[in-house]
Image 1 (spheres, rainbow, N blue to C red):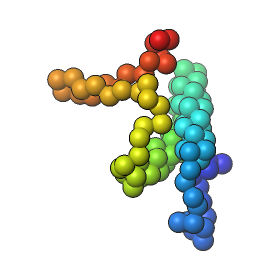
Image 2: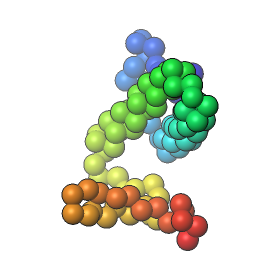
Image 3: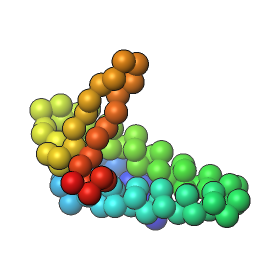
Length: 97
């Protein structure tokens, strides 16, 4: 079960820290890998539940980021560059640099 799921009675009581955020990022990585694997096998129907969890996690992380605008990025090697009509995220870890 996703760590984002919190029963109604406990909502708003959880403390968000670096470890929680990293767990969510790791979980999202696994979800993307799982979704990709199912899609490659032609099992798109099974992807829906994982896509919903991934969406929920991303919205939760965005909410945390919006609530803490003064925080620095977790990874200083992550740079955002903007093109003519779109933004591109360049991560030096992806290209092996």
